[in-house]
Amino acid sequence: MTRPTAVTPPTKVDRVQLAFANSAEFAARDLYAVAASLPAFSPDEQTMLEGFHNHHRAAAQALAGLVGSAATNVRSDEVYNAFRGRVMGSDKSAIFDALRDLENTLASTHLTLVGSLEGSEGAALVASILNIEARQSTALSLLGGKSLNDALVNDSAPLALGDGA
Image 1: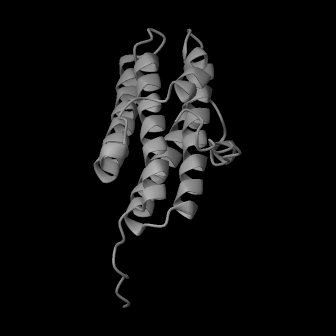
Image 2: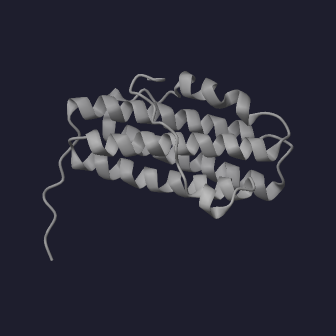
């Protein structure tokens, strides 16, 4: 068994990228709060949406802990506003689709970040967040009536650094 190399902290450039991810995660947290408050969802569905809300809050907090003072701990209004109109109303399937798109966008964004971060500590954290977002996307797809094959496809483009930063 090989021992892993030393864990390396985020660089200055990494901290900017991780702060961007922090603000995107807070936007997702707020979008789930909106969706969970809608009367269209059953109590069980609201509980699931609240759980996803909590996952995004925890991801944002973990990123803030790693980034320190570079983290704004404020949601990205650009990300929030890009999805806000789609998570309203009474069409549960459409709302699940919008949230799936949000998760896929964040997963694509985080996958791009993992490949660009220099410090292994930040890359490991972002990779762990990415895994949860991919799972949430799949669950939302299935709840929205998609087939498993469709649920496992992510063709969403990543956010560019600066989109909502």
